[in-house]
Amino acid sequence: MEAKAVARQVRVSPTKVRKVLALIRDKKVGDAMVVLRYSSQKSAGIVSKVLQSAVANAEHNYGMDTDKLRIVAATADEGPKMKRFRPVSMGRAHRYVHRTSHVTVKVAER
Image (tube, rainbow, N blue to C red; front, top):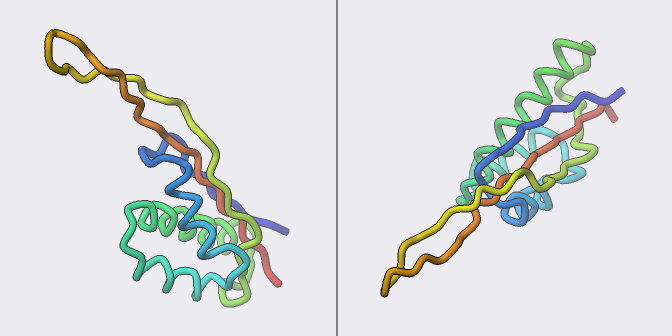
């Protein structure tokens, strides 16, 4: 039995989120929370909220013991891109892209 939580259209690029997810994959929930708390990256706070939501889902929906939970899967997929323009010299404009991501965390008892 697995419980999962998803955060969609988060304003952080998927590559930055994947670096943080690599730190917590296949760990106990308590250990992962400690790693995320002391990580200085913006995406660590987002992943921490998704992990807390997955733990709450496991406890409330499936009656799992939170002390025995492990992170089974943690993925960051690409969300919609927001394309914008920035004015530059001589009346021109350069295009830039705000990338978003969908963060998924699955936990299970082991």
